[in-house]
Amino acid sequence: MPKLLGVLESQKQLGGASYPPTLDRLTELTGDTLAVTSKALNTKEAKGRVLLSRAAGGKKKPAPETTLVLLTEDLQAAAQSDRLLEVQLRSARKPDAPAVDLAQLPKGLVPAIGRAFKAALHQRIAERRLPRTIGALPGKKPLFFFLEDAVLPAAGAPARPAAAATDGAARRTAPDGHGNATSDGHGNATSDGHGNAAPSGAGAPAISFADRFDAAFSSLDRASGRLNYVTLHALRAALPDVPRAAFDAELAALRRQRRYSLDPSDGRHHQMAEAERDAGIMEAGNLLVYVARRDDA
Image 1 (cartoon, rainbow, N blue to C red):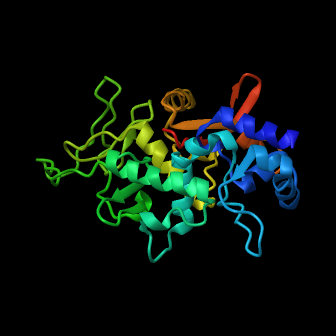
Image 2 (image 1 turned 180 degrees about the vertical axis):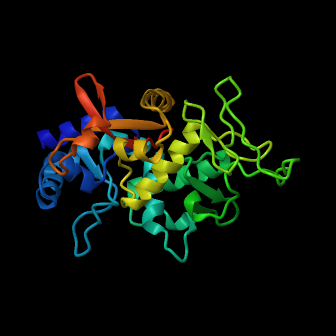
């Protein structure tokens, strides 16, 4: 228990996507097996200090990847968190029914969390307050869905077709001397050296580093099973035109905005390759190699 509580406290300090951790993630962080961690959480001592979002025990035990583990004093905060909403929506959605009724989202939660969570959902609808990755349709039966499941206009799509070049051929343009990117004449975006890219087409808005980073993170996270953990190495590779110094400066800005957090590798479950270590950022003696999207952004 002391080790388990210590891990929970440290994850709480990290905040964002780090807390509350799933039962799966807590097991990984403690270095124990799922059976050992589950047994520790079922002790009398643990039940007074720790709460599982889904009921444990019985014939059908809660799935470790969808069960959050939190300190009892954080019940209300967890019920109102983006993290719980994302975990519940991910668990409830189906490929042929990606939008989920509000009434279905609290299912599986222990009563105390379920009641607070349902009230928080109604409050979200009233305040039109949702995570960046989730949308909702209000009404008698509000529906929640992931934006990645919705059909939306392409980011930066022009309102009307770009005017053709007057000479009948695509014109190659160069940077304007102020660090702004332009098209290469073949429909490809070029970077301004700060991670921003400009799509071709007159009047088309520049694509910011933040938008490109969000898209790269979402794509890589989806491909790795939506664990909300992507290596810096993979993200740098996804934005090859951004110089390292510019990448680090822009990522630091996103961290200050509490949109992303960085974590080190404990080395127990994945042996980092040299390239992955080289892509990391050293801070306070820790080599930070993983990026996680914060739920409180």
